[in-house]
Image 1 (cartoon, rainbow, N blue to C red):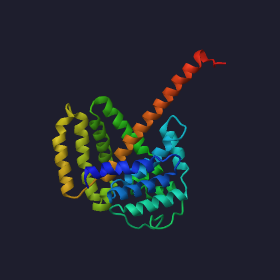
Image 2: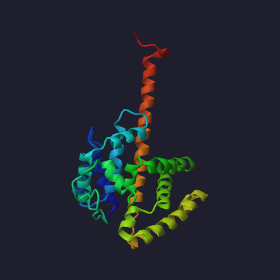
Image 3: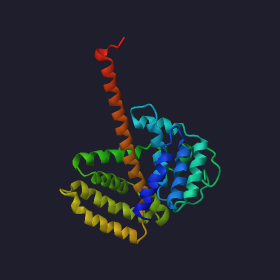
Image 4: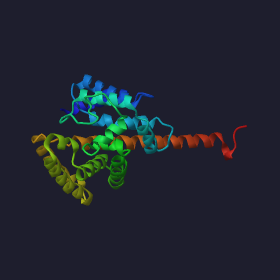
Length: 266
């Protein structure tokens, strides 16, 4: 895959993901189908699965994205599961196999949140549905905010979130394709880099070593793709929450201008 394919995939998936008033399952299926038409490959299934509920939550009339997301996840039904299952089968991610309960190759029997909860122990994307995206909000966004406060370069905040996830969780995609031992090895190396990043006087000094590790992973065909998906979800949630807060502030300013001293114009 190339960087251009990921950019094209994002452009193709954006409209279905953000379709007004659309069900989460419809967003997922539409985004995956649009991506496959655009690039002919599964570049973003995990991203789509994570960002669809976040996009739906941003449409809710709630100042806090996390509160709205809880309501969105609780509202998921069997239709959402059927559409999500169909999208997963179409995308055909590496290592996808059959399971005894709630197999994506069969018709859904339970709402999407319940089906995801069944897979939460083996898949970090499914785990987010079962925990109301606790890893994204409590770990990813926390690390992103801390890094953004410490360093001015946005890429360092992204790197901090990425290494934070990869150093704490064996990557689900790596486990499926290469096994738990390889995933644990990657996790241990990420722990080293995570510690070096937060202790570095000049984080840019780490880039050469990080890129060398990246080259080794590529040569071995190891792709911590689920970690990348969680990082994208963190950035998306951060951006959506910022927009919602700006909207609340704007409404407050407008209200104060229309209702001076707490009195209405009548």
